[in-house]
Length: 410
Ligand code: SF4
Image (cartoon, rainbow, N blue to C red):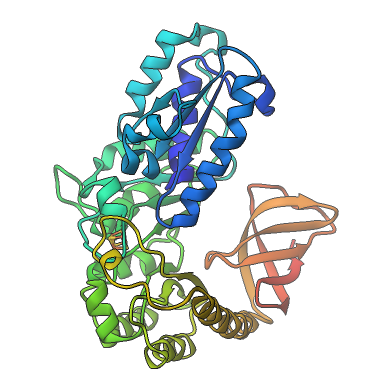
């Protein structure tokens, strides 16, 4: 989401006559797009701000701005805490921030021709902001507000603009992307996927992050039947213990989660499934943790993102004792990582001898690197070359936990 925020900001600033510079020393203004989902993300932002202070003081006229979740969480307290801060703004009103800047700096959109930044091959497109879930550990609803879906036509316009800039793969974003509803027609994510994949030049469509409570058949059919929608579902389960899930207010049981995955895999051949897990939630016992490990072994996810519990202000979980010691959280993370490394290798070995479609993202020294529809990294020997931005078929000869290798077919 932050990458997407930074992208939209850059596009807006460039259209207003500002230009991005590669070297910070040449810049007049630096903007930090911050995250507050975990305590260490905030620490990183403060660390980066400290570095920028010296940069700002080195030349009069320089300014620092902060946006993103931390800006929303701390509000104007940030100015007290960071006296060198010049601007704090809510990403929901980033256009007003750009208007303010235009009053402060002399810019001339005609100078840049309003040139919009060129993209790489992939782009993130937010389709729904905020979240209506009330997970006990999560700060997102407090800093990003309740759900607001964008009109379907606006999303399609953005995708068309990206396609014209050379983007070939888009990822539709939302904290609970599968509760998307077009404000006017109430059309859901499946309809949006269909509209987006019709945009000329777009070859692949993905979406992140789904909530298990909102996975319905129309979405699964869309993944199965729409040729440009990739066979990939990111579906966090967080814990495989029903008592912990209840405390987390995830509003599903382990059995319900399991049933969704079994059903989705039945419907969609070669579906890849990734997930998020939290270990060391307040009161999580060894036995409860072992259930999470067992679910990893049972479901065999393609990718698992694992975090230790981090208490966030204003959340219900922050009022409980954070009683799993940091060292124990680390141990649990490592146990899961080690299991997942083995599982991922087994999962990748299933591709040996098969031919996959790869969107080439890099091509150099006789090798092409890209990802499959299932989001697996593939490196293919391409003695006759392979052009970036093309889709090539690669026969897989070698598999590790993290990547597949093979030959690009002509
Ligand atoms: S669904 Fe995701 S974003 Fe929403 S409250 Fe739960 S964890 Fe946070």
